[in-house]
Length: 344
Image (cartoon, rainbow, N blue to C red):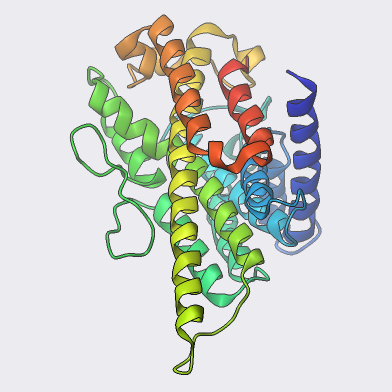
């Protein structure tokens, strides 16, 4: 790991952990069991990739090198959502894992009932945190919509909201994170196909990674907004300026979405490779479960060598999407490159 990435990960994790400490109830807050279970999973470690990607995207969009105030809270909310999904994913009814990030999973430490409720509570607190962001109301609503659609059962809004359909090779819409988990569960034991693997990966992991980047971009753009209101007395020049700004904004979000989708898929491909090539001690979770369950993974369809080439190609495409941001895109590029070279 190069020094730039190391610095980004350390500083980003520190910011995220401080925000999480501020936002989560203390272990002494009643009822103790639920709050201690939430904190057990949230503070069990992890790279904090989603909040770091969110914050670095906001920083890149602003272009001054400064992190917009409140971006750490948005990042923390995304980490809560990620942790909630892990708690539920580890349950006996789903992946039935005893180990997560090198620690006992939430249901092992606190029992199934409290683990389910801890996941529910983290999801609820995440949306509460986003709703309380210090940003213009329309931006907050857009971020809430972006995140909720990505976390839910489907992505495919065509109503002008700015949430683009997640088109697969077949033209089908990619489901959101929960939808991806359902497809993953229902496909166990089924011979994996390229289309099935793409559906699961773009949704189960890719949707939340993509929305971390897009929501960070939306927050960064909101922090730049001039805030002027175009009423009936607006001049032609003012209307043209707003339309021009809107066009640039739409292009920015489209580029960020492409970047997020590419690195989200690359991230999951690398995760699949690691599951087949690393030990449980190296991964911090149970290794080899995907192969044992005949799960739909990229290497199962394409083999390990082709999977590595595909991950590299996706990162190259992701780089191209944010090239117009110039040197400000450096940190995000470094993080994306790290995703394909990590060993755990």
